[in-house]
Image (cartoon, rainbow, N blue to C red; front, side, top):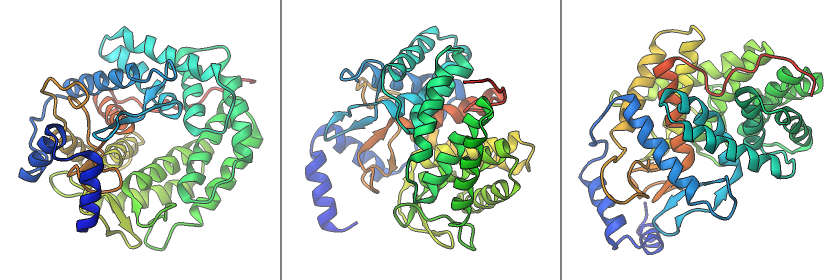
Length: 366
């Protein structure tokens, strides 16, 4: 990091103030030093923070703040984030015996249904969750309408193609629409054509963040299952293995990689690592090699040791920094709701063996 970059970050986030300064000093003393507790304890803490993020989103009732920063406090409500969180809150409500989470998920779904249909992947994900997990009578039809908009949406980068493929494949499975399934296959072909000989994928920005790579891998694995496409599974497994090989013994992983899997960041990307834990667990659930569990456990343990679950500051307690150390990377001094979502998903996948998102199998007319 250059002196100019550090100066600009310091000025924007007012690092000299007690809140950010305390976090910076603690990271300078060493990261991953927090007490590691049981999955259930960390899951409860993480969801309590997500509840506070939803309560802070007053501009759009039912939405969830995209995160929190030292510069701006709680960020505006984001319906794409809220849509993705529905499938997280519903199983957590059961496993934690916390019915309020189900009510919150219903509020998120109601807000999605009140908005116009758009090609947002998060929106479609939330509507599918409303159909599969809440049995809402309108959710599938509205998801199909958004899927029709997604058919016309442009995609250029590998992650855009894979996310579109995954959602269209899910919609095709649920609705029986061949148009969705054919479009999903075209998106998969486009994404696979971007994979380099080393197994790496370029994102919209190079080097590719670990978060982007994790999303690509997960989308490939899920799409492969839905479309019975072995090439996608092979490509996803190859990239997952490369990241497994790069994972440090303590669970640390660089926040970005160049072609050839060359580390291109001095920080860890928390949403990427949490999502990768879910990727490895999903491969283990599919009966792949047992070593995937080892990778997921190491990653989850490292994330736990960076979650500060004590203190009176409710914005920071239980939050997950998007970058470790806090001052590095494009998401410096930020705490993202998606980090909390992916961490919660992986914890539940490991605790009770469920798949998040739930597997779409039933076919109905929409």
